[in-house]
Length: 269
Image (cartoon, rainbow, N blue to C red; front, side, top):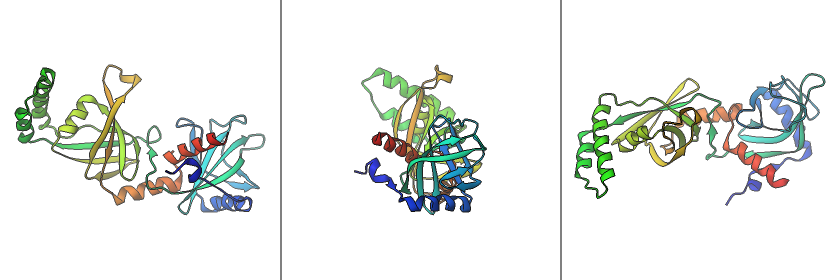
């Protein structure tokens, strides 16, 4: 089993300034964060020793410690640092810098950085109704639920596309999204499903969607509507893989590997 300590390898001192200057010349972005709400991705202007010159983020102060990362040639580099705001804005590494290899199972956290949605096209046929009628349940509540669903089913055939469901996170083989209990019922009882995800203005069709779990999801904005967080898997999609690689290379979203680095730092305390 891979541990957090196995994921991150400490850079030797002579390599650190080399990698920071390579980041500068590559014009790739540096990602700085404390959490999903305190996050920025931007290019650096210069390297002064081990310090990085950049525009001052709105949340920056000279007291807190921040996490940072960047990607070069398929490798991710991680560090912690502080801001020096006396003359301009310098981000100063604190402690060691670590390297981590890109992993296929990394999750990219879409919310709240990106407004990204999954749209299902549901295929309901008469067979769904016949199957429901042939099932005899000893639970009266389940029988009543099937009758209600059968009625909804007939109405849904008239408009087989559900509205977009908000994507929480995404990987090369799966995603999680939020929907209401009634919408989840429609998705689960569809004979076949295809879907399109919309991310950053790009649309990508996914095939072989399968629901693998669902759990209760609390949403303070709509407490009266029972919501579910739903996990789904899908077939490999080259177009999606290219987009995720771009996200990773440009350091524009937080990932599960970023979370792993935070946990790794906690083990060192």
